[in-house]
View (spheres, rainbow, N blue to C red):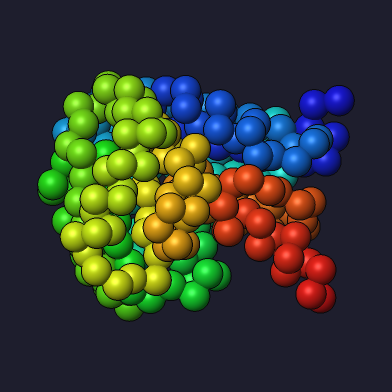
Length: 245
């Protein structure tokens, strides 16, 4: 039965396309996704504001559907508002819905801390300005971002880059960056989560994809620690941590 173990709400800034496809590749049996979209149209600041204006209403609706946890997606929207805005969003979502929540930026930082990463490389689909904003945001929280590079994809073409292409791009970014603790692949519309296992296998570098980080936080909060194999070290660590307790 759908969602017999847990139902996770997701507020997406744009279409939900790649994220559900990737989620059901690694989600344990009985964990369901309940999504809403704010339908932003491009990288412009006014589109970001349009998306943020819909968050409270979307959260209230997901709360009325009795989801168990809510994720607010869309790192660039939060980063554009400056340090600490992830806390504002989480507080607004939790107040409107009555259920625990996170946002993509917070989940990413918590996942990086979980794997013990301090020296970070960012490989993304973003334009240069959004890469720089994310770099500065992470650095304001104490991370050392040694390189941040993106493929500069048009907003509606992000999903077109294949996992194989993302693997090759990330390997090039890592080679140029030098030593690091982890590489972070932001954006749920980029097919980065599907490349994680290959990146770790071929480079040895711990790889945190946006979608993995979001649901890692949700699973941890909900006590879901079923073994997840073949999707990288972060998700595998859920069961490993539980076994050590």
